[in-house]
Image (cartoon, rainbow, N blue to C red; front, side):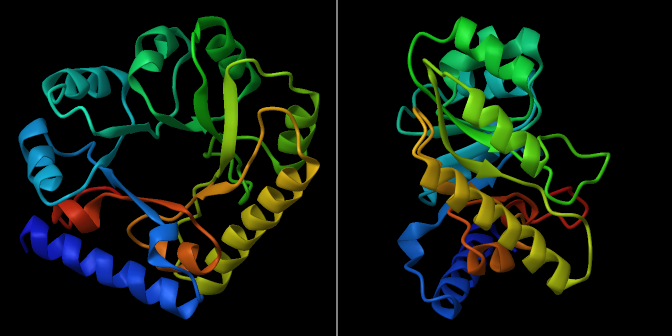
Length: 229
């Protein structure tokens, strides 16, 4: 399938999920996860109208932002775990960080930032040891004690477990939605927490029905069945 056909299929799936959950399709932002393709193929997606691109490795991200610097309307999302030592290089280039997963990273961002940084707090809802992020309890405690100057917690992010159980996926995404609403209600400084980054190729439809506002889709767009999401 061509990238155009892939995008049309993903768009239809988004529209269907929005219809099923009585939501407007404009409420959902599609972030193209482009870690497995080069700048030339990214340009193909750009020419199809995609403006939100997500990368998960600092060196590759910096290379691609340089290669596509002439496309100044791209919105760059950093979606991978960010090493503290890479913050100073990555920070000036990103529009959103989806992986604020530890207090030490927040401290480094506050130290290096010179302007507001839109961040999603990463929450490990499933409790899997292989996943990064705060537990629900840690997230609440961390944000209630925080005094951010530059960080803006726009919302929460989670990665669902790899499972064939739709019920389990609904449960994980629903829990994140509940936590997002709880944090939003606290009206904390620099923590609007109105957004939800959840859902990838295998589960973004379910994520949308549970309230996702940003979905991170790779394989379904780049059309190689052997690629990771």
